[in-house]
Image 1 (cartoon, protein in one colour):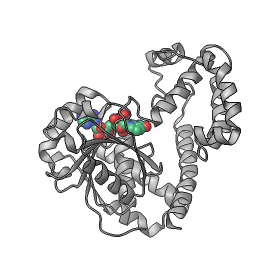
Image 2 (cartoon, protein in one colour):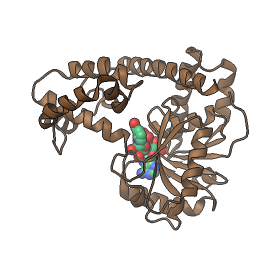
Image 3 (cartoon, protein in one colour):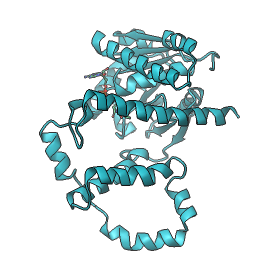
Image 4 (cartoon, protein in one colour):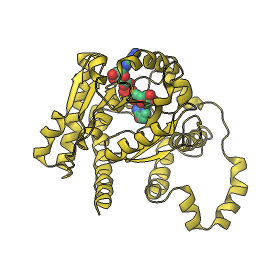
Length: 318
Ligand SMILES: NC(=O)c1ccc[n+]([C@@H]2O[C@H](COP(=O)([O-])OP(=O)(O)OC[C@H]3O[C@@H](n4cnc5c(N)ncnc54)[C@H](O)[C@@H]3O)[C@@H](O)[C@H]2O)c1
C-alpha cells in the first residue's frame, strides 16, 4: 500500500458515491475529509465503508492491519468550511439537480482555498452550466467516478468551456495518485461517454421488454453472459476489429433501422416509478429485493470487482 505524502481531499456528500470516493482516496493513502448533511448521513457512510473494508479483507485484497489505517485517514464532518479547508481537491457528490449544484458551488467556492480544484461527480450534466455561478469557473470540472468508486478503475474528466488546461492536468495527476485511470472527454455532451453507452443499452433493453421479445430476466442474462463477459476486455471498437469490420458493417446496415429511437423511458419503467417500486432501495423494481438478496448481490458484485481491482493493481505495479 502506498503511504507516500498526498495532498488532502475534501468530499462533499456522503451517499452512495461520496463514501466510496472517500474510501478510494483513503485506500491510496490520501488524507480525506468527508462532509455529510447530518450525523445519521455520516454514520451510514461510515457503516458502508466498514462493510466494504470487510469485503476487501475477506477477499485478501487488504491486510487486516491496514483496515484501521485506511479508516483513520478519513475525518467525518458536518462543517463544510472545515471539510474544504486546506484541500487541494474538492469533489462534490450531492443530488443530481442542476439548480441545486449551481447554488451549492456558489456557496462552497468562497470556503475553498484559492488553489483548490473544484470537481463535481455529476453523472452527465454540463460542467459549463454546473460551475456557471462560481467566481472562478476556470478551476471547475467534472470528475465522473463510477459506483462503487473504490473499485471501479475509470474516471471521466470533463472540462467545461472555462476550465483551464492547468486545471485538467492537475485533476489528472490527482486521479493518477488515487490509482485511477482517467480519460478526458473532449467535448461536453450530456451523459459524457459511459452513461451514453449505458443508456443506449438501457433504452434498447426496455424496448425489447415492451415489445414482448423476452422477459426482463432473460434480457439481463443476454447482456450479462455475452456482452458483459467481453466488455471488460474489449470495448465496442476493439470487439468490432476482432469480429471483422465487414461483418459489423453488414449487421449495422440491417439492424440500425430496427433499433429503438425512443425519447422517453418505456411504460414498464414509468409504471414502476409511479408505484414507488424504485428498485433495490424500495424492495421492488424489475425484481423483488429482500434485504438478504440485496446484501448477497452487493457482495457478489464487489467480490468480482475486487478480483479485477487486484488484477489492475498487479499490472500497474509490473
Ligand atoms: N449512484 C450512482 O451510481 C452514481 C454514479 C456516478 C455518479 N453519480 C452522481 O453522484 C452524485 C451523488 O449521487 P449519489 O448516488 O451518491 O446520491 P445519494 O443520494 O446516495 O447521496 C447524496 C448525498 O448528498 C448529500 N445531500 C443530500 N441532500 C442534499 C442537499 N439538499 N444539499 C446538499 N447535500 C445533500 C448527502 O450527504 C447525501 O448522502 C449525483 O450527482 C449522481 O448523479 C451517482
